[in-house]
Image (cartoon, rainbow, N blue to C red; front, side):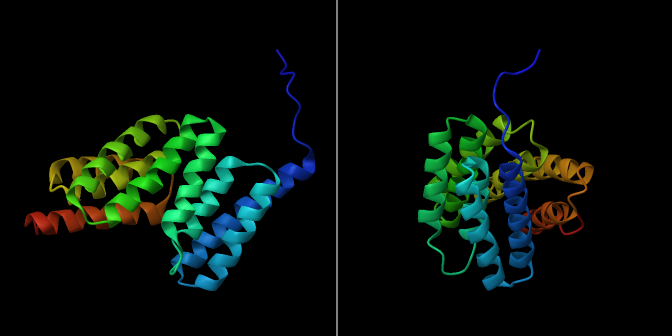
Length: 193
């Protein structure tokens, strides 16, 4: 049967596609350490996603903006959490929850690391239908498990994330999975691994 919900006008779809391209360009600029370009791309993406009332896009743009040097990450990612909460979409709440889990990890506090682990695992479960987001959640969970010295769990999370990333041909993320796994093996004294 047909849905009676109105479809978005073509200009809205074009604007969202352009914003998505800006997020991708921002991520590439961030990887290449071109911070001014990254800020421009993420800022424009946020503006376009706001204009088209796209909560997921706004969260992704805020994610990038929060990774820039000198950014007030807690404030930007707090805004992402509010956007997710206002949307009422559990997948967006889980996505924003990953940002909060990363902030907790950055604190260096053991209790925060345990909270980050719980949060990342819950997000991974909710994001099971979105492979790239699930993989990211598993990487955050692995980092949290590493911080709590639960190396076997951390390696299990990374193996699952690596399997997803390889299947999705997300090679930058796959490299991150393997690099983090190597750091865990090194920390555990498993130098051969």
